Image (cartoon, rainbow, N blue to C red; front, side):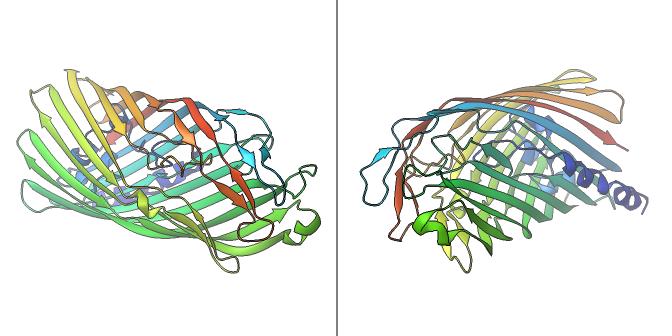
Length: 432
């Protein structure tokens, strides 16, 4: 009961931290920076590690806990890159194709951001623990000026998800831990783009979709702990989001002027399921090796579906992916642990289906970090990551006013070039 009162008093801590959520970009629009300790080894052992800092990956991580523990962390994500026009044309009705015009190079469209995360857990009995994690797992912002060549595809795209994950874990045997969690997720989205008028001499119109709402999923996981080795697996369900909001169209002239309006509607999309496998092995008293593989069901994000009265779908065409990571923890002294890791993460976007809203690509993540035990109860974690993106085509065909006499195709031909990101992370862990 004493530990239950402790977790009740701390439950608001990670929730309040949401106020500082910012925009970032990794793994399409999935953000894995939910643990500073994990960031230091490129997220190579989180499903098999123990403690509340691993709750996002595996609710079984808090089984067999003594007392209470909490973690807080923040990651500053600094992405760079160019989205470059390579011959995009627009085809207005009855007119020959012509260059789309606008700025031919958009630099650093993905915003810098701060990503917080927090978790707390307590033992209720020697075999039963409960916990709560607060994360922002699917969030990003891209901003392009209305003079950019991509303006008919995107000018501003903002997505925020705030996930509360209450969890419970139980030691079935001295070696086997199981856990389950509810994922209550709030989403807030804004997607906007320019609309071409029928004459190239007229200024562009504009369209904006906004919406928000709460939706739910779940996570289950298990760990097998035998001597110096821990094997683990977890499954995180997809979440089918329904956002209540509106579509606002302005600035259309002539025959298109009748489309200027604000229409109340809803938008539906699904975030991916994840299956995670991992292992940790203490090969010596000071050296622990980590490995992790994640299968992500990005094919669930096949479209953004706009409800009545519009009843249209924005195709996305994402595909399922794998990511692989390996890392090491080295206890160089009683109060200092160093980490390093490498991760390869495949993009769920494909040539022919990639647009400027999420200019994504396959990437390598190189990371290092450290933990400093300030006292027996309090530890500081730090991490630095460098993420290197492969150049990738931006080439998804789009069309304004599709299916009408005013249909205006935009034949997109561009490329994401010289993209990279630096991630700086700082956090702390407290046990009591």
